[in-house]
Amino acid sequence: MSADLGAPAHPLSGPEVPERTSVPTPREPTSAAGLAAPAAVAHASDRGARIAAVAIALAWHIAIGLPAVLAARAEFAAPAVVLGGWALVAVAGAVAGVRLLRNSPLPPWPLAGLLLAVDVAVFVAAGDRQLFTAANWVWSTLGWFFVLALWGRRVVGLIALLTTHAVIALLAVLVHGPDPADVARYVMYVYGTFSLPVAVFVGSAVIVSLARERAAVSAAGHAMAAERDAAERALRERRDRLALVGSAAGRVLGELAAGQVDPGDPEVQRRCVLAAARLRRLIAESDDVPDPLLHELRAAADLAERNGLPIDLVTIGTPPPLPVEIRRRLADPLNGILADARGWARLTVVSGPNEVVVSLVTPDREGPEATGPPHGEHDDGQVEHLYERDGSIRWAQTQWRR
Image: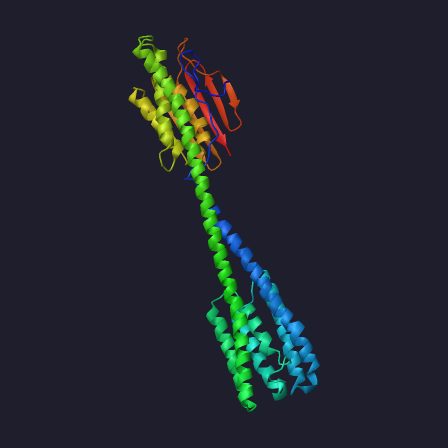
């Protein structure tokens, strides 16, 4: 059986329009891909910033805080409290860091409450002699753990925690009877406590936002370029098909105008109907409708009715989105048979999520004028074709499976 059931065997039928590989059109959904790229870039940027924040917090706590605590442990007012607080924050920070890197952070405010409680205990236990030394590790370390606790949230929460931390430190300074030098040191410590964690916290959020924005702009540019290329290819393809279909119709009209063929000849009439059906379906392909396949088949059925052929069109189910090439292979073979039909016709479309079956039943006509493809079944790799005739009816079917 031939690959195109609609190709007439008569030598005057004109060239068959070849199938072409379909290309995506701008109407195909691209929003998913357009959103995935910026999200992936933002996620990668955010993960890098998280790794940096966790590394700074734990490295500062271990490399700077721990040696100072161990060196001055004999001079603390309550060494066990200072060391215990350091160990508790180290464990909580390690757990928070691991959870943060796995994108499942701990509840922020319970963790922040624990850190503030340790803050108060260490300031009390450090004593006045270690108040402004590296041994009082909460000065320089605790702000980084606030960053881990509130990562991904608004900077207002971080500022509130750092302000509370500064108030706790101020109360400790006032309790120990400050002098002007202590006040100056306090201001410097508060500045350092605020500036670096807030800078990292805000800077990481800005970097992630910029990365997402630039990735979105780049993805939009690539999508527009792809859509433009697809539209140009689709336009060239339609022009080529229109030229081929138009040449077939023009040949028939030219022969009629020159008196080379008889308008009453059934084969000439069939060629005219087939050319008109192909032109109508080519026009219907570009219509923006919910069900393009049904729209194209209805266009062919309307043309048959205008030519005096009673036709029933039965649809069951809704066809899934199909490329233009598949729709052509489903419709074109039946259009050729429909152009040759006499008496009546019944066109049935049965659709499911993974299958579309289009069948056409017409009366069979004996004699050489009853043109049609050979009996049997043919599979072109995407659409199966089946054609049978028994002297009473002719039955043709095209079937697509996902």
